[in-house]
Image 1 (cartoon, rainbow, N blue to C red):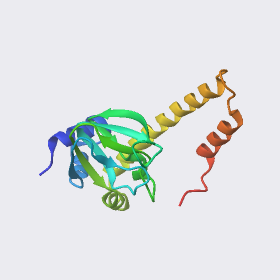
Image 2: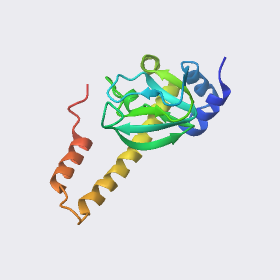
Image 3: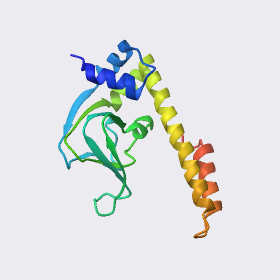
Image 4: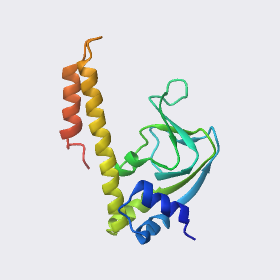
Length: 179
């Protein structure tokens, strides 16, 4: 049975380009997951399980440590939202941050194996999903560029302009890591 609330969220929040039938084809490949408050949804560095749709609840995203003491909180995300999109798109994807449930959460997971199978079958819905994720990631890159420029221009401490410029060029133009 198809979860119609999930279909609606996917079509309105995740990917407006999807038709109802296309959204249902993605939902049919998804599996539900309940996560209690305080539990880890995914851990930075672990292999991805797939794309997660946070349907109900709130999570905290942190980065930079495998234990709670060394990790730095980045954001609190309320449902509905998407988690795990970066690791989904990487061939050998691992989670780039740790996500912990702040409240009881209801998620739906599109397993990485099913995602790859849909790509291999040239499923139109998954292509539309990838296009949407690419757009979101491109917007984040533009925001990161603005933040890096702001930091480089700050006068309260010496800015590592050359290092930031080199990093930006490598990030944008180094395609040698493709597999």
